[in-house]
Image 1 (cartoon, protein in one colour):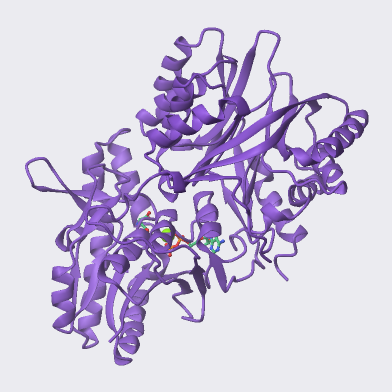
Image 2 (cartoon, rainbow, N blue to C red):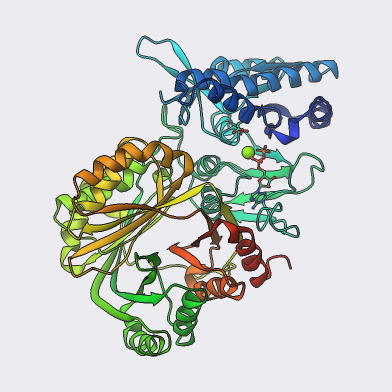
Length: 586
Ligand code: ADP
Ligand code: ASP
Ligand code: MG
């Protein structure tokens, strides 16, 4: 008999009729002879409504009480669905996260799962029951051994379902939602977004962490780590849906470490890089497109790209290329500057250093520790690019052995985890598989920071200590006459609200520096596994935006993702433009 885990999201359990329909769906699956564990979300907008209730009483409700309150949403659905199943003659029992003993770390609001006890669920299954588990919640063990209710973070029922699949050794995990599966983008923005039959966990992880709410990124991380067969399907039609795939060898589940696997898996070193810094470029639509089209005309494959704006509204764009393209790039840059103005410089003998691991996600302390380690070794970082699962920077080749030693020790990496010039396998993957939009972001810049080791580390550490998650850190190459630098990053609106005090404290330690909050923005990200291998993808993305006269405020890339920060008013237009440009609806 196969064990199936089926998760139903908020809209799919939005009213009583829908809950009854699910009970019918389950009866069919049961008749096929399967054991079933169901995970449910709160009905419709219940979680939002409960949050608003708490906030109407207190602007800063106690996090423990908020978890007590929010966990009731899922508890209601689980009981109602169990009642419905019993009504249809299917023996069912509902359970909260604490009753199952989904043990989490003691962190209210975004706890990670450490372990799931399977005895009670297995007992019920053996007795022929369908078990309905309330998603999004667990319990932490307090110091005196009593259980405290915790929640996993918004969208966390997906994570409950995949974690239960891992602990119970389920045959597959199906996430039922209000769309036919994972689409090329959010159908609320682009009506003719297309269903993807398959998507790699790496691509989905990037998409989910930059706004594709269809899956919780941590659910993807668990599926990838433990090789769970994960499907996303429509709760209305129950048709094929999307299957997530991964080539990684699954990890062994270790006691107490379900979601807390090793944070950093690899240190990657890519030698013979050149950093090109174009500065004082006009800040208007089409500039980035022009530059990267010009580079791709000469078949130059560009690696990292970052763009940040500066005070006087002139842009800097920095990118890296392998040294073999140096002559050609100089040639193209001369032409670019002649056409659009500005200046450029380049630094040879540079090395890209990256830490990589799915456990980096959602843990700002990891990038902080990485930069702190480099600064303690007195190494200056000249360019930073971050994604959810990789933090990269570029350093001088003379510092590389010191950096390897310090970082390797810090993250306890063995020789085999240090990858030097890893060869990228060329696969026939699309350069853009999907597009995500995150409107819940703000842009914050530090200007006039001293250009010396340790400054980035101190900013990252201070934010990380307060558990504030920052992303898309962009440090450009321009150094002013005063030997200062600018750094920009994005963070969620909520985290920005809580960061005031920390940012002010930081400024006191950085005399002469200022903090500038950017205009209302959104982050548009194109993701595709083929991006790293194709010439000119970035240029095409920027061209799609330029054609619509959309100005790009910031650019940040990782190997398989290009993110552009654009003004809030341009967000939907930007997603639609890229979707159309890459013919994703065909
Ligand atoms: P649930 O309540 O079932 O968990 P969510 O609202 O969390 O559902 O996620 C489903 C929603 O995700 C869809 O209604 C859709 O608007 C949005 N979405 C964003 N990006 C995508 C995408 N690439 N594919 C499918 N849906 C997406
Ligand atoms: N109900 C929670 C939320 O709205 C968890 C979930 O639906 O996954 O975020
Ligand atoms: Mg969801």
